[in-house]
Length: 310
Image 1 (cartoon, rainbow, N blue to C red):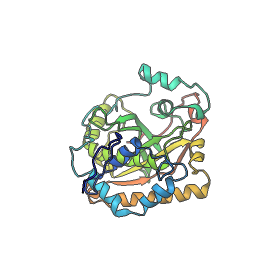
Image 2 (image 1 turned 60 degrees about the horizontal axis):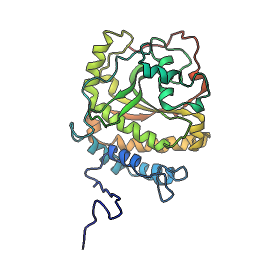
Image 3 (image 1 turned 135 degrees about the horizontal axis):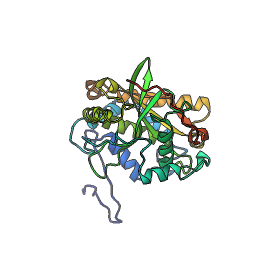
């Protein structure tokens, strides 16, 4: 009896990752590479992402914990944690030429036309200290940096859209904001959550180096918070997108939102059962879905005033 081959006669490839080796980054990578939107069970399909993705995942806590264990098992395995140059020194008032072009590309057009890159640039321009205005879509958060690279491999593609600190009970902790655009909303909320989980686990691997760089950069930028281990005890995962995105994925009506968030929190409970995550003193939590509106992108008076955590 012949064993299945990695490659087939028609040129297609098949990959099987055994449970002892499967990690969150594998799940994310193959989901991006494969056609996960097809009608034959693709969990990123508009009609199927709940039934074939979110629901079965949320009900399998042992697998969720195992993937997390595997993700944190080796400090040097791919994607290798970055040790420096997290771009924490980039300031909202010192954009590069490319970044400025992205921030101004859509002017004051409706948010439905904006790309994720341009949304990211405009939000950071308006709401990061020292500019920070009061009408932020993230009222309990202080933005620290944008497009924060977490991987030391050139092709790692692990960049946090917006890194922030979230205030809860007078205590600040790290928050990772994943942005989605309204135009061509190809990625389901589940894919957004998986991205957040991958980034959060990578942040825990980079924690020592992030703390070191924040202390260095805070000397140049007084409004940049010096990160400490305390900030990483809880990591909030934030999915932010325009109304059209949430409606496309049937996450707009209150009852639907409540159901999806409950399933996602159940999924994260499985992630948090990992002994290796507990040993690092880290807990992941889902923040409420954030709806981005036109007013968040409009250019107006930058009047300052958001509290900067100490």
